[in-house]
Length: 253
Image (cartoon, rainbow, N blue to C red; front, side, top):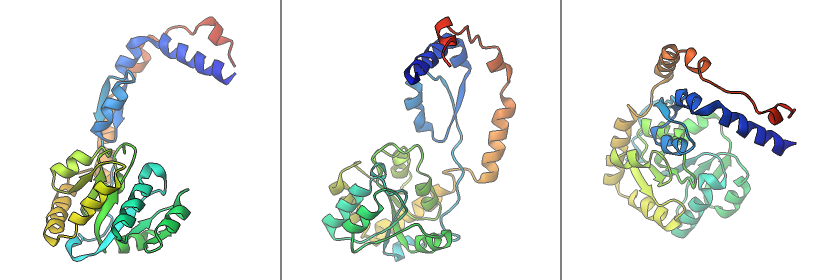
């Protein structure tokens, strides 16, 4: 019955015709999401980045710190196994904050690292203020990388995976470094570059400057979203010729 429903849904979508899909506009959290969605037949896009705010109340003087920081879900797709391999390869320590199915595995794999699981926001903010750099080792394409954006807004340079949709702008704006996704040796090499005070200070200043324009604040995001909807005409969808549902599909409950 489930398969019949899926077939029915597909036939219904086809019956809507290209007229309907030509009128659909998708709001993206990041402009680099567009190629993935365009391949599915969608045509019209508008980017409105997710609002975010700095991880810390004050800018971080990252070059004076020595803490390596990861903040996110403990899952394969977030790249924590690649991170653990790179840390053990180099003998480095790090702070990994977050929960998820691989939390115990990370604690076992990284006995010399601080892997507390979930922490209160106030404690996360305190620890972020001690960060030298932030890690986003994602194995899958991240639509945005919200926490990385928050880190840059605080002046914390980032090391991001080449799979991250913000990788190009991180490198282009001198806000951090990019490593080859899934390659622990590549990640280890980039972490070693962060030993340089000159490098970290340059990237920290670049991150802070880029953080000023990387995303809107909550008020600006709400205003722009409201403007988008106000400019949209309900008739754009109502006038689309949806077409009739095939008789056999109508019998599916």
